[in-house]
Image 1 (cartoon, rainbow, N blue to C red):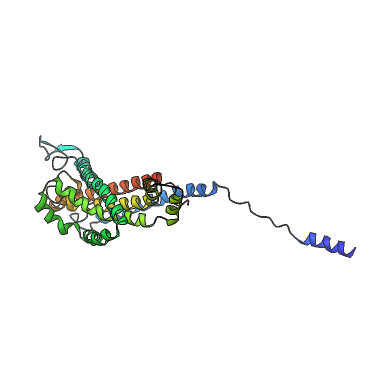
Image 2: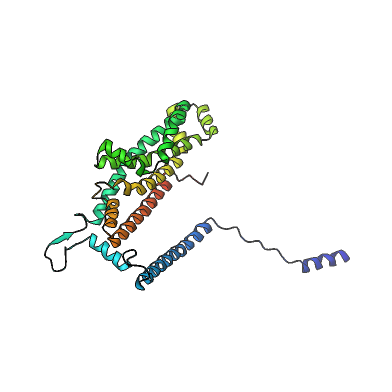
Length: 301
């Protein structure tokens, strides 16, 4: 009887312990989806605040408009660079764009040069990276020169390229190629060296040929590193476009930014800088989508 009473008291005093259900498989993505609008809202608020401060500084004339024009002046310069307007007030002569080209045409020409230079850099960089990662003695001989080119600023050898190839697009493409080539080579070498030896041995033990080993094991394993190297190379090439277009770069967004600055056309210079920055962000975003599409297994292994 005493034991039964004790058991009843324990049941009365003891509170049942409830466990929370394990989070469902979609809880994580739902949280992420909820955070995305908040992040975008924060970015929008930051942008609006920056423009408001910019407008306030220029409206109060704290800085000379020659050095910092208002957002309205920059917007007007952008519109004028993409439309046809009279050359002067009351004139019947119409001029379209700036330097005989619209601003978007300058941008497309720069993108074309970057695409050609980067295309050659991707092909040569990946091939050289595979070769240097396979031949040790060749890597010891060639790598110091690749690192030397990587460390050089573009303006350091643009004069030599002009002597060799003139002031045409060949010099610009070579300059963009040299800016993008080293990071692709280094990323390819790092990607191949990072391939797990267990994967290679497992493939060989299953009877894989060298071609199958390269195409089915080494290349997919090194692909994330190679793609990230290409992403870095695009950034290096894009930051080099102004240097590449310093001489005879019209049409070109980098040359337009440089020439408008020398002509004290600050609103157009800032408009070009903004366009260059937005184009760089768009390119980087596209590359990130491509990387995620081509390497969906990254982070899931």
